Length: 452
Image 1 (tube, rainbow, N blue to C red):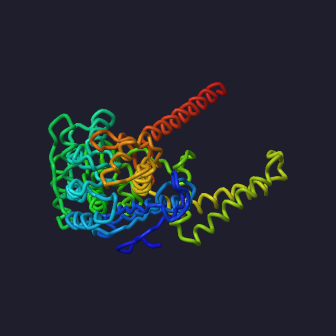
Image 2 (tube, one colour):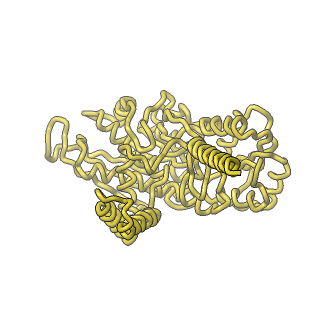
Image 3 (cartoon, rainbow, N blue to C red):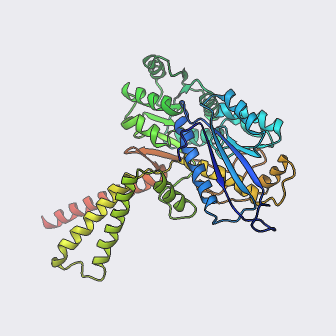
């Protein structure tokens, strides 16, 4: 099933009632999903939609009890805020609630529509501070830009000693709100601020930014604009010791990282915790299901074969004396199986944080439905939303504040070899290895001195 099409309908045909059992009495609930599936923000919208589809698939499997049939319609907003609002107005003629407002501009335009219709709107990823408390019908799963800004400003100032900070800002609702938040919490006067658009002269933008002689530059942008700004700044020489380049969680998606290429290495970014290697549920199952559903079939088959070969090689070595020279061939085979498995795993399509946000957005709507035995009017859905307490999600436990903001915090990641790694964990490991190397060198020197 392809989410690239303009409209898609999914039906969860569940025959489970809280009181009446199976049969035609099961009520049907419609949810609309309005996302930018095309346009500059399409890379985020597609990932969010993939996550929504996975959560709907789980519901359709019948493994969980719900007193409603659920129909989900996905519509492409094309990244146009006013079009998104118009589509939402039409959708609310049949839909009980909606997921939408992937961008801050879309969310800001859609909130009044939700308010007028007395229907709930859940945004997976809008971050503008203006959205806090915008309506009792609006909820979002992405922390406010103020959270990201505060985390990064504190880090740059106190951890990596940035004295002069300049902002490079995409001329968009997202870029402006994020940059404003950073400026507000920076705590001292900025070195300067540069605004750019996709059609801007990149060289002029870079030269203006470098002209402020800052030791830190924060890029408030998303998508292709973010990748291009990072590349331009690196090409102009903003790199190396004492030059800190930072941005938001907009970088935490493979498409943008790939577009930025090696220029993204050593960039700092903020993001809530999302660990695709976590063994904990529901994250582990979500990642496994995502890889199976959205990975090229040939690559998935190769991965399954590599897993089977790795298990066979490990089983063959169990109970054997690994020090026995006669087992060299078996050990070599096991090592080759491990390497082949790692290579096959790299080829899998791994979910981004935004796919997790889509999965959890759908989970929130399902969780709210589960709290309701009867829905007389659309506004009754608010009761289910307000009943959500510590809902397990793949992006963390979900709890909402009175303002509709999710209670999440962000941490610092650093891009290393094209991948985001937790800054604190990375540097703890780096420091440990350096200490071990220094100790090994000291031991060697002492041995040499004793032998003289």
